Length: 212
Figure 1 (cartoon, rainbow, N blue to C red):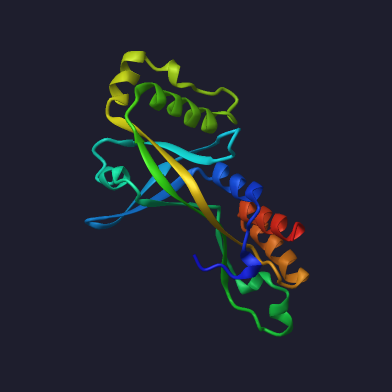
Figure 2: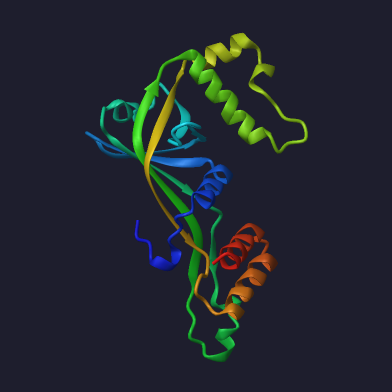
């Protein structure tokens, strides 16, 4: 990924927050039929002793991408992206002063590379389902859990999927949120996005430039 120095994000805390807040990843593999991409939700975990980080998920056994995932030694790419937005020059006060402004697009992205392991173990898959569901339900007032569904129904559905674990070997991340712009223009973007009901991106611009 092309990453200008001002947009390079190397802090794991920021990378982790983006992944956990936007767990629907795009998994990309290369095989005999060329590139294949699918969009699946992931659960991020880490080995407490070694610090090795893993992306865990489940995929349908009939998914054609499974063949590439099973190929030993194949490098996998999983892409996570934050909320994003078009940035109009109208947000920048500099527009009224010099007109030397152009549109852009603000976003954050984390690219995780690693090796995949396909797991056809019922207990592991069930644990992954519990983790993934818990991750998404935890913010709800009345959360739902997998064990609320009939066990026979869960067992039936579970037969059609297998587990996936990707050991992360390297990470690239780009956080493009107006860094190095004039303060008045950064403030203009924060205000403009909020007024346009894009509060999530507005908060990201604010956060990236508060800690920059």
